[in-house]
Structures are given as structure tokens and as C-alpha cells.
Image 1 (spheres, one colour):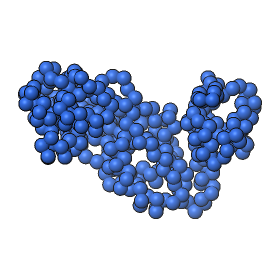
Image 2 (cartoon, one colour):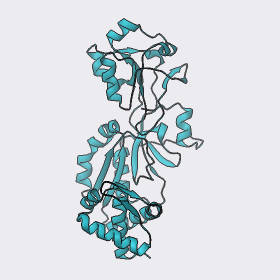
Image 3 (cartoon, helix red, strand yellow):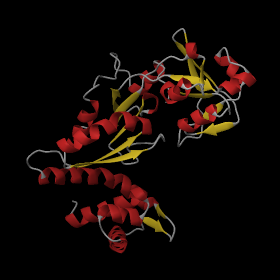
Length: 322
């Protein structure tokens, strides 16, 4: 049985464990760092084990702390939702919804709905992290995420958002004048290419093309590896080499002549962004309100008629990374 004092201590511990910072956790909870430290020490005494390793410069979880965080997080979320429902007996959703979204997806799908959402649900706080890294949403404590289908975990619910995405190869006129224009994807092996990797991943992304409805990839080489598409666009415009980016990201530079599109006949559109969240028997009202608000304009099923999981469907239908 979780007593009120236990709930407060576990909430304090979870805040420190998720931020790995007493200062940030104290600010979030609205308490002093010294009071928070005392609460954690009291919890450790009750548990009978050290939960956090603390130095003057860093905070990290012990093995016992990792176990407690994994076990406590769902309970804390459930209790917070219950307290929220008790405080708002009129049925209006309340609470915090933690969202992890790719930056461009947040601009497209979140910014336009924020003002109206706040007016409709004044008691809901959206805690949004903008990050292009591919992370485990559940393990990181997020309620929902917005990302491309290629990197959604198999056990997540996913709802398609927006239109398809198209990637193209681009280079500056100066680079083309010096090195020539590739006539096929295979020609890229003889060019300077600007490689890209997903933030948070170690492997480099292979460029993907389509011919006769069949997708294939090319592992390119070059003098530059980045984890920012925007940086790759600017590097290509400065003549470093050929970049492979969303056509919308390069549109302005193509229009003013600073970039030239390449291999367009091999560049087909693919499935774009999805809102995803863990499967759950009882969804918290605040999360349901958020999901409905984001997906309402474009809500449609993402599973194939044969029920094949999204991740398998994405690979089979050649959904490609952003």
C-alpha cells in the first residue's frame, strides 16, 4: 500500500532520477534542493539501500535506484492521474502529458494546435521535448511521441499525421561544375557526399532511392558526417559535397539557385510522421485529449488489413527515415 508520504518521496525520487539533477528536479517540484536531498535520504533509509550516487558534479542511479525507478514510474503516473481526476470532478481532463517530438514534426503538428488546446484544456500541462534522437519513449518516461514510421517500436499504437515525405540529393552549382552531375545513384560512389546519422545512433544512414516501385540503398562516402539535416543543407550550398535531405528543407536554396536537385527520378515519396503512444487499457484523460487534438484533422488507421504490425509494414512498404 502506498501512503501519502510514500507518494511524495517517490515523486521526488522520480524527478531526480529522470533529470539526474537535484537543482532541476527541485525547480520542477517547487522545493529547495536541500529539502529535496533530505527527502531522498529519508526514502533511502526506508528502502534500506542507496538509490542515487551523488558527487559535487553529477548524479547517477545505483542498481537499486534503477529498479525502483522502473517499478515506481507507472505507479506514480497512475496516482497522479487519479489525483487529477479527484481534483476535477466536473470531468475536465487535467495533469501533465510528456511528449517527445522530432523538431520539424513539432513545428508542423504541435505549434498550430497549442493555443486552442490551452483554451480548451486549461488544466493540462504539455511537457514537450524537441529532440531528433531515436529513444525508447516508455523507458524515458514519455507519454507520446511524434516520429517517422521507420523508428516506431512494434508494440506502440501509431496514427498517421500529415502527408508523405520526399528526400532528394542536392549539390551547389560550383560542386557540379567541378565534379559533374551523377546520372544514377550508383554514380554517388564516385562523389563527395555529406553523410548523416540519426541523433543518438552510431550508424550512418544509407541513402535510399526507388526504381520501378522497388527501394534500394546506397552507402555513400565523403568528407563530412553530421547529425543535423539543416547543417547538411548549408554545407551542400557552400560546395562541400552532395547532401540527401527533405525536398522542403532545400526548396528555398533551390529556388534562388544555390542548390541544384539531383537524381529526382529515383526520389519517390514515403510515409511521413506518426503520433505514437504505448498500448494501454485505460488511457489517462489528459493524454486522450492530447491524442484527439493532434490526430483529429488526419486521423486514420495505420495497420494493414491483415493486421501486420506498423514496424513490419513500414519496412515492407519502404517507409524511409527523415
